[in-house]
Amino acid sequence: MSSTTHPFLQVENLARIYPSPTGGDDVTVFDHVNFRIHKGEFVCVPGHSGCGKSTILNILAGLDSASVGNVFMDGREVSGPSLDRGVIFQGHALMPWLTVLENVSFAVKSRWASWSKQKVRDHAMRYIELVGLKGAEHKKPSQLSGGMKQRVGIARAFSIEPKMLLMDEPFGALDALTRGVIQDELLKICAETQQTVFMITHDVDEAILLSDRIMLMSNGPHARIAEIVNNTLPRPRERSAIHKQPHYYPIRNHLVDFLVSRSKQFGSLRDAPDAPSSPAVFDPADLIEPEPAVAHALPVGKPHIHLVNA
Amino acid sequence: MKTKLSLSQKAGLVSVGLFAVILLVWQLATLPEATTTAANVDPEYAALMGGAASSASSFPTPAAMAQTVWEKLSDPFYDNGPNDKGIGIQLAYSIARVLAGFFLAAAVAIPLGFAIGNSRVFYQALNPYVQLLKPISPLAWMPLALYTIKDASASAIFVIFICSLWPMLINTAHGVANVRRDWLDVSRTLEVNPLRKAFRVILPAAAPTILTGMRISMGIAWLVIVAAEMLVGGTGIGYFVWNEWNNLSITNVLFAILMIGVVGMALDSVFGVLSKRVAYQE
Image (cartoon, rainbow over all chains, first blue to last red; front, side, top):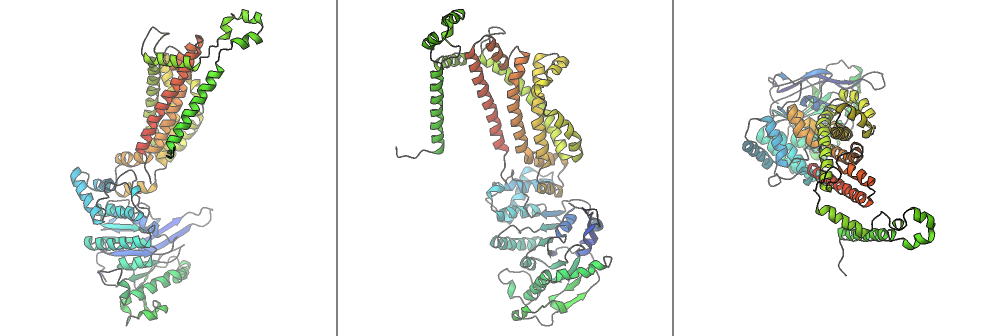
């Protein structure tokens, strides 16, 4: 899809190895993780816990460091946390002693230390309005519902206008209805801001709704990126109509099929841990004719995989 | 009487009732024992003890006590020389010493606690010292203080300092070490500089724990000042208690006890208010 000439984010041969607590062999959570993210692209990583998704996200954020490998963003190596990469945390991570406005202003002030109070406030308010929290700006996080708290987290992350946004299961703690509403808002904001996003989720539908590409990871230890699914659903997407798209069920079935059964079968990779990682790419556009919804009981994905060199 | 009483109204009624019961028991216990004394005590012994004097206890009746309280409180700041000062002056001396020692301790304990809480190395290095020094009764330092400082009042302040130090130090270190990782991660991703992080993130996050430490310290300081002033003498509520004991004025001792309680409660409630102000709900 996008041109591969200037990858915005490049992850090379990333691995995370923990020394064994019992003194035996070291535990390799993941290794040979290679991927690229282009500017403006929305990439989702669904997957099982334990394969190191969150660790990868923390390494991208600069909060954690890899045992092996490098991360480059915009041509420069990531070596620590930076204002260029906004993070939306799973547990919203708002400071409970600050109001909504103060929480967002804290971030804005961190980004533009020389700005006047008024300018910081106006800028923060703009993002608070963007997530639909106007009127609640003087409330403390404890007075807000879970969904509203996460919106503040989103406003805070967007307010610093990062080059890239990292989200670690941002809606995991929300109920399904609230999650849907916030997903819609996120979709809208990302479309407006052309934000580059790397997002971890355990929700397949969320991944399909939001992403341009979905990276599938095999189970750990020695987890790696096993497949990349190109999400060909046209934008703008509507949560209410997305399942009527011809590519919806092939993609969804492929993802579920992978997560439920095939993610375990990548054990063969562990036998050759030094084998270069070359994830298969699944692209529903390769299907000769999109299967109608009735056929979705069949494992649609398997025959349509071809390998590319990463 | 159909109206329902609120919880605090009920509690208030019980409190007043309890006070009435205490007064009644007190009154009964301090009734003049003239008849019983005459019946039970050997007349020769009574004569030896001064006869009439034995019948009236030094322990005041509630009415006599109330009168003393009224007299003392209506003129709290008179000064008739070293052995006769108003209760306000004595309390002011004690409070001044407590505050001096307390704030000196806070000035040391809070920054040091910050450092200990932030660094595992520092924490482990200082932990044995803290554990060793913490259980020492603050009054045990008194001779050392008197010897080195050579000033009674300053020694009392030092004793307050040393007893206020530990709860504040330990709580500050604990509060700082247990700031939620999420908040620290947020400030890391926002590239917040260390000073701003300390004052805008760690301090407010640890403030409730730090204030609890300060409150405990203040409570201990107010306990210790009475004992310290009994030792160093001269001025203060502790000295007043001991002086009135030497005068065998149980009424004044009782009055002083009451005042110690009132001031202690007031100091604690100040910290109660401050705690509420820095508290946050997650």
